[in-house]
Length: 108
Image (cartoon, rainbow, N blue to C red; front, side):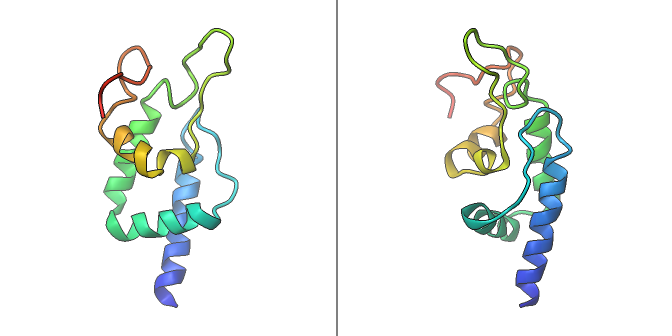
């Protein structure tokens, strides 16, 4: 029971920190699959790892909606997308932080 309460508290702390990143889609609530994923990731990673993830997102023009593409609204990452199994590794590898603000092609 205590571990579950700690996981919920940490998930809410992550939501608050996520919402401090300018340009991303705000996270209004954490539930369902996102809640389960964040609990699992909280068991696997410490706070400095989470902060490095948020820094990677914040420095990406693409993930923070600063890249304009003709005929499309700018992409703005959300917490669910960033922590997804495919995207998480790409974000942490720096695939979205190149100078042009576009995801690097051919890099996984």
